[in-house]
Length: 239
Ligand SMILES: [Zn+2]
Image (tube, rainbow, N blue to C red):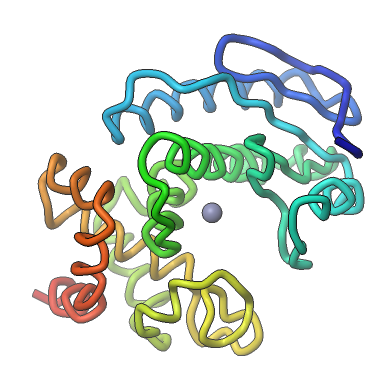
């Protein structure tokens, strides 16, 4: 495979990290610790005991990331990461790691891709975009700032979901950047990631865990639930 980074920065039982440049040891250690902790959390959620070793490829430029990723699929200009080839591939610019918060967000984004890998390989081969993207955000800690304090979450819902257009569920079933697709990058009337996160949280808060796992693993149940999920979510949030 072309353009694969070949400098090995770390290997343990869970991950191997490759890059095309060196990164500060403190960042690689932080990535290792959070990755292992979150992987356990994700596996526990899906009731799975183990997962294979995952290769993470860190690219020092958007160009090197696109050169590599284009071998698998057409890459949107907004894309910074994916899990093509069963690996986690991410743009990782050294300068941005100087910001502790940004570095933490990058790590959570890498874990987001891990959720997709585990889901695809161990949970279901039915691809429901809104459900997967909601779970990937919920289980990666990407929106952990909304999980410690419910009032903060309600304020966020008001600002990011209810003051914008709430799209029909069909808009959230196809990846893409146009109005009517998952991300409305052109007009920005809604954000598919935000609404998917809110829908998954609503499901997690409405059902018990074993029901959630049954739903996630069952294509017919997902299709049944998604018929009314937007209406139920609107009603349920203002109860
Ligand atoms: Zn995703």
